Image 1 (tube, rainbow, N blue to C red):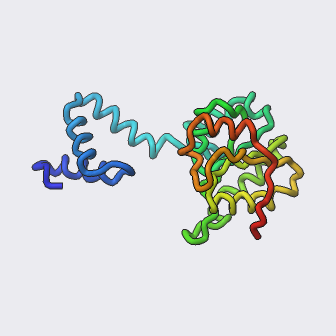
Image 2: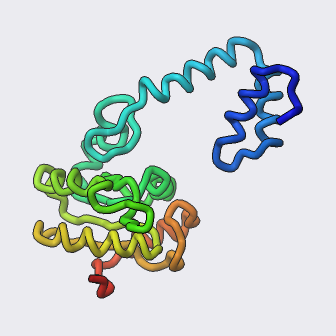
Image 3: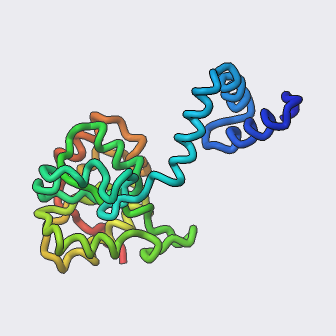
Length: 207
């Protein structure tokens, strides 16, 4: 970036340009916007960004981001009492389901899907934590709310084999979601219908 004569502006723009979906032109607009803000705003923004690394933690139960030991969802007794445990790949999927208002139980974030080509095996996911939760919470249903991708199908098959011994019904989202689609990019209506019309999980024959 050669637009700046200030080293501070240059370095800030380069940092912003490294964010997902932010190119050099957008980074330039962001920097110029920040330069027009009062010092109090910049100081407040700096404190919030610093707090992301010092104040935000992982929920000890589900893996969601939280300010305390439990996230706002897990801290609600009425949601735990529903007996529904929804397994998702990552935080964007949790947020997508929450936005539909169609689910009133609790979640478990895996942290991704099994993907050997990228070096992601079961050990890298929060599967052991899921198995430890089940005897403690005794859910009445485990919902595999994963994307409609080959990696997610492999993960669902693996989870079904690992969790079957608990004797708890395992369901999955109805296939209103097109194959190859990621959960977080599915529209709210389709996602809500897929959750409400969920079906018993049927292994697809993977081995």
